Length: 289
Image 1 (spheres, rainbow, N blue to C red):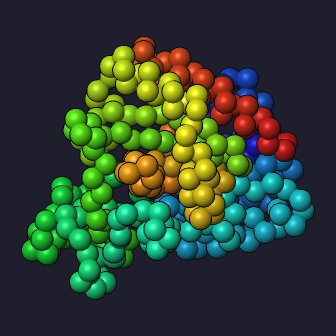
Image 2: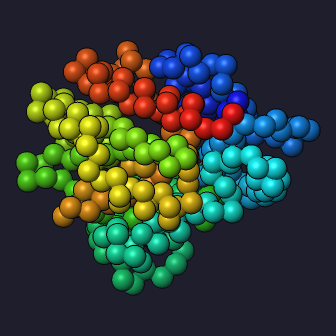
């Protein structure tokens, strides 16, 4: 059995229902709300997700339980002892020269920061919380306009240097790939005129052909594997752009939407997404149960 734990929304459960119903007997989805009250942890594989959204107390409990499971020889995906927070992960990618852009806490010195920048939080996946900010004054104005909730969560806020990944025609490509215990599965290429991209807003025959080629060849496999290794993440989806032949990593989500509903996918892209779904199901079934 695969035991999947998340804070609330079970994206893996959605994937099973929409794309891989044959996995129903093999996947159990659970919420962390009941985690303190569990008295037994059966054998199988455990996927701990949503680390970005969890507090210190919950992470501490997961860490202790993960260690006990590993001592029993149980497979654990996303070992809390290896997990690196988004902020530290992006800092490390820049230190190694892999990411061109730097990140800063809003309350730390920013003398070397390169404009433009944008605001975002390290503990959610809503993307940018501001437009592009082009001066210290614009940064302070943006911070002043934050909601009370975001001001209270100021310690989680980051200023991210903008990295231009548009092609000469003004098209932005957002690449993604899944990792399931070392099985790397290319997910998609989304084409857009916007630098914040959740869904594709450009779908053409040429773009679909490019996406299919990406899904078949996955030319960034080595760089993506290195990014997951640095992050200490065995289950999740990496989102990135490309600049001068190198991936520029935006984030790794440990509880991503695995694949949208078939009804939400353009017919031209459906065969490629079906291919990804099959590969993901195979990787899940390959986990010890």
